[in-house]
Amino acid sequence: MREYKMRRGEHLEDRVPDMEAFVEEYFGEVTDTEEYEGNDLLVVDDPDNPVFDRVVAGRVEYGSKKDKIALHIDERPAEDVIAEGNVDAAEDAVAVKNDFLEEATDRDAKARRDSLKRSVEDDADAPDNV
Image (cartoon, helix red, strand yellow):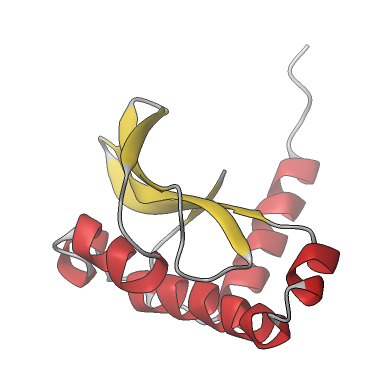
């Protein structure tokens, strides 16, 4: 499960007031919920895009910090998707994921990558807890 933070000055609840409708718009009908870090995330067991096998997404609340959006996508093997003739769906899958995250966080793919790099570097610089 990967968590994505909001752009400075932005809040998830302002950008996505109805998380269920938002997830359904991008991935398909929500069929279940799943607990993650004390939060109920939305599950799409039969996503609209044939590349996706299962999608879990939702709001992760951190009392004193800003909420983040969590997203985990199980993808089908590429050879299965290609064998079914769904090559175009693979390109669309990347766009759907990026559009979903950009609309939720107001950060494009480059900004999300840069932020991830910084957090990994910060973790590497932290002293080990012994």
